[in-house]
Amino acid sequence: GAVVSQHPSRVICKSGTSVKIECRSLDFQATTMFWYRQFPKQSLMLMATSNEGSKATYEQGVEKDKFLINHASLTLSTLTVTSAHPEDSSFYICSARSGTGVTGELFFGEGSRLTVL
Amino acid sequence: DAKTTQPPSMDCAEGRAANLPCNHSTISGNEYVYWYRQIHSQGPQYIIHGLKNNETNEMASLIITEDRKSSTLILPHATLRDTAVYYCIVRVSSNTGKLIFGQGTTLQVKP
Image 1 (cartoon, one colour):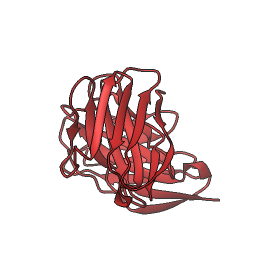
Image 2 (cartoon, chains in turn green, yellow):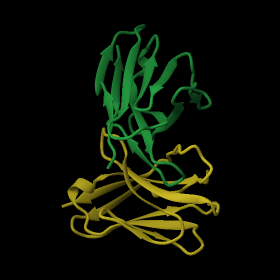
Image 3 (cartoon, chains in turn cyan, green):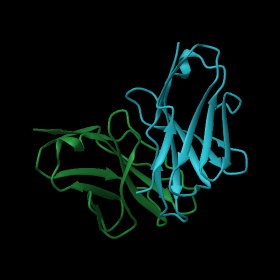
Image 4 (cartoon, one colour):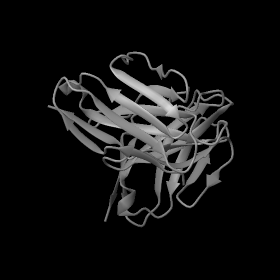
């Protein structure tokens, strides 16, 4: 199946710093990628839809200035958590759609665990 | 997108079939049923999807009722590695492709 890779898989940072997470589709081009966050023992929550070459679409309640998303190419989207605080500690997961139409499958990255001290 | 209802947890004996139910009584005619699973601390993994007909692949079978208000994911011979949270999701055909996750079913396969 298609492969989506995230980097880093784990990151620890100090409060107030910014952290960038990369999401790459390794063997297909993805015009659309999605970013989720997941707190312990909870389900995935969609944060935003990342469209190549245009601004991301954020879900209600997600601060766009806090979570900067860039989708500069068909294989790379980045999520930057700006001025991170301990409450931003979470598991961040990206996904990308392979193919077009409603039946295009969504493939997920391995996730990136952010810990803010 | 239509909401889904799944039991929060289920147990299954290793080697037996695991049958995971999902209710989607408000599903529309253009919505597909998708199943994903998430093993602890990993990204979700695609399992199978369908519209009306039953589907089967190397991982599982998907049985959709005739009125499409419910479905069942069947893992024919569960192994310990199938222990995971299983998510049933419905998605409209005109959607951008995003998936909205519910709480899912935690399947525990026991030896």
